[in-house]
Length: 458
Image 1 (cartoon, helix red, strand yellow):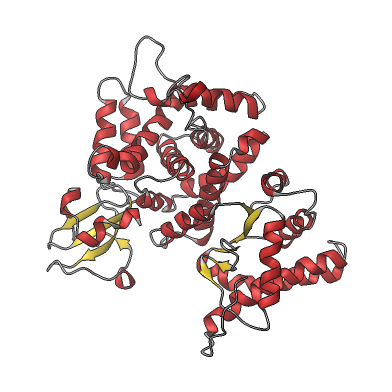
Image 2 (tube, one colour):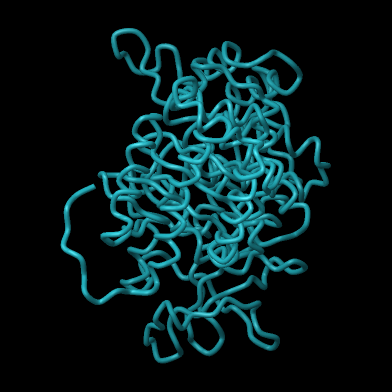
């Protein structure tokens, strides 16, 4: 922990985060003195969860990490306090000793789940890095977790999505945060090299599937697809789009879980360059099949994931060779939509969500089943999340999530008034398109206000 002079102006906003950090370190020390199930330790766990409730109620998660030695909570550096300095320094050292970035609590965490996590966390000699993360997954611990090293970028991506997910319940925001972080750790740090059971991936995806089936506005997270996003972020966004499409096609929970697993793993061969760095030898799709087969137990779900990894780039084709399976096409279309948004800048100016949707529908025209195109439009709306639109009075708004009954009437937030004056972020309110108001057109990318044009890449 770097040395800093204490600020005489003590900001009370930091009192609770500092208490949470220092008391977590006290829990670690207590766990070494008592057995994890001891009544004194259990009482401390209960008290800690009570202290944590206000943060989870407002932000949906509480993340502690030390990216450069100084402890942070939810990305905000905790200030120097003389009476807590030693505890925070020790906590950062505990994270480093376990080869993790930190820990994160997600809304809904229970005392038994927290206790199970602490039992593993306290065995620092036995469980480190991905082994600790995998052990938590194996134990079904989903709402308190250790974070893989160097996963700060993933946490920032989750934070970026928080504003557009503000209209969703806390459990839905937590479901997205869990999927986003898990996909980043799964795909960015070779977690498959240690083996993975697909039932654990299903457990990670289950809250997302439940939120989609409940009709909650989690599709708003697609508004944060950004140019050059990581392979983990790409997998999470593709999974969300694919599950949303599957729900519109009438798939049940069991099938949607298989869709989620296939979408999460569709690009596991990404980055493969083949022997001696020769591109596409073999193609990354075949490398993906190999890695899934090596890392998982072969069953119907893993075979579907392997076929999807192999076929998803051919989502718009038909005829010989054999046409892709329906699951491969569904994931392929979701992948194509996210790819157009995130990688369009490699070819030309970053395209708008409406343009990306139009391009995907164009892929379907030669041979794709019409039902897939309809499902995509129903999942994203006629004005997909993140699209800027012009209202009938000349005001500009951002589409956040498709309307439950009418894909032409999304939830929106005003970006600029009818005079063209930008509205500050603090004054923007998410709401259904008001009755009697209508959208006159989707704005092409080059007509977006300058401040908004840069926003997705932030």
